[in-house]
Image (tube, rainbow, N blue to C red; front, top):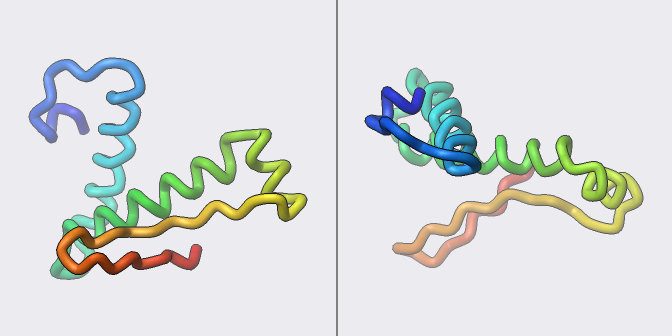
Length: 86
């Protein structure tokens, strides 16, 4: 996926982020007419899922009701925050 994005060398955590976003973009290619919005939404949902599933401390706090992890998309042109129910 990095090659498709025109990236030749991407290191460490940046590579992981690029790969994750690339996967989300690929998953939305056949979706609706607004591919950018679809890719952003898919990436936010993916990021929320990673936080919920991959962090033991967060997971236990989620289970106990101590925290909630929610996704949101901020539209810088309108100032509207779209809170994602997921």
